Amino acid sequence: MSEDDDDGQERPTAMPMSPSEGVRQSAEWVLSVSQHVTVDRNAVSKLAHFLASEFSRGGVSAVNWKDHELRPKTSDNFAVDWIFLVNALNFSFWSGPVESQSTAAKFAVEFNGKQYTGSMSCWAAINRAVQEGIPIFDAAYLAGITEDQVRHLFRTSTSGEMPLLEDRRKNLQEAGQVLLEKFGGTFWNCCKLADGNAQQLLHIILENFPSFRDCSVYHGRKVEFYKRAQVVVADIWSCFENSGYGHFSDIDSLTIFADYRIPQVLNFFGATKYSDELQVKLKANEVFKYGDVEEVEIRASTIFVAELLVKEVNVILRGHAGQVATPSPPVNGILLDQYLWGYRQSHDSDMKHIPFHKVRSIYY
Image (cartoon, rainbow, N blue to C red; front, side, top):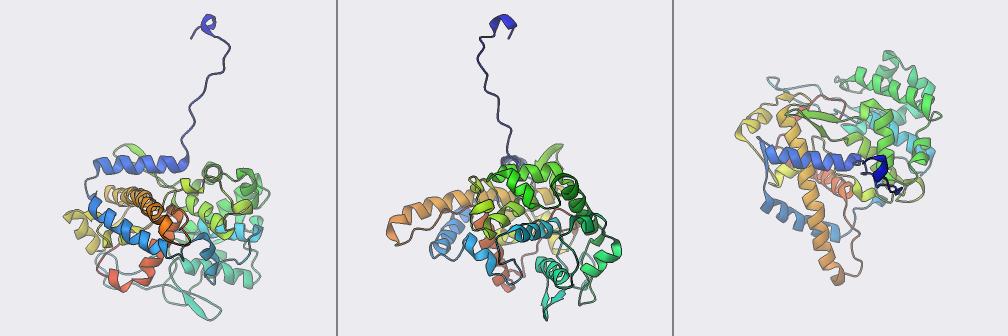
């Protein structure tokens, strides 16, 4: 438009895509060209009806988050900093055989006389540090944390060692440095800046903390996942029970969190189908690299299927709303993730024959 054509009216500008919408669009595109993973729509629909039945009984909500013994019982700045720190470290907790090895040392962290494994080993380690007087939430301490301090922090009660300790040290150091330089030493200030907007808090995390930028390149195109960043927002929402700084007007915009366990559950239910080639690799305990074609397709299919499930489950629940005394609240990606994660834990023996994909990565 020339200056002569300018009528003085302000032109609307295109809104930038939100981080979570980037995740959705990435997943949809990957599935449109996927070579090793396909989606069984009939199985997805069957699973949606099963999930709707489960959700209609209640028991899955943000209120349940604090039920776990290791999680904070308060809704305050301590809880926010705990959530952020735990999710800065929330990756690669699997153990077990890989490739030609038939056995591998498992790791566990002991806290208050109890052994914790998996992601809960990290929660236990953080709580143990607090109990021992280690200033684990002091940004200055984190900014200068040493290898020896990290080894002590994550010491195990078994012969196995928690994986990727140096990467965990780097993430803790990054968290401390950025919080000190930009946010007054606490993630609480990030929540204040987000002002009740989940996507804004995601943007703050991704803009300032590089270790949360969970993106791959698939056939030359950027593919977004942002698993840990989205979990930070989801955990704050759950901890605060959708109130105060944990109230996000757009919380339903978050997707499910593409890790290595939720794909296992979806494959167990038949919602995803793996190629023969991929199944051979999974059964051989092959360790994939972050960004491998198969790895990207597994994660993308998880998000794609979850989006289908959220939509169909809510349609079913709305149809049943007039038939029950207390209609179920809408199901979002967070609640679906909570249910499927819990289902895998309680049905672990049923899924022994379904291998999960193994990756050593700081992103999940």
